[in-house]
Amino acid sequence: MNNKIVSLGFLVAGIVLLIYSNNASESVSSAFSRFFNGTPTDQTTWLLIGGVVATAIGLGGLLTNWRSTN
Image 1 (tube, rainbow, N blue to C red):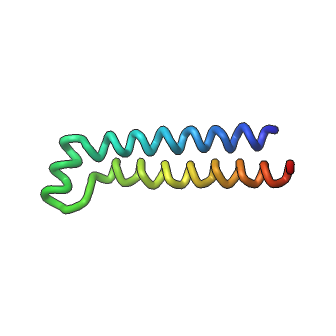
Image 2: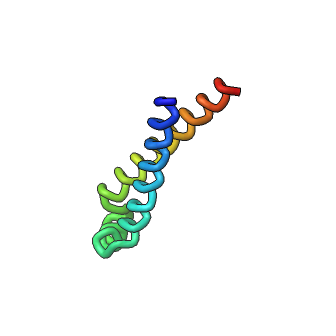
């Protein structure tokens, strides 16, 4: 039960980070960074990486818990 709650927390946190990274990628500073450097800002990149990793951990934990209970 506790593992399921932690996994769900990771999943929710990952989705929130992905939403923040999407908003950050549309910001003025990210647009300037893409214009001059060809890449988004470091903050956008780390939010995206953190969101993907947290979402993957959450989904993996939920799938593992689901398989073990069935």
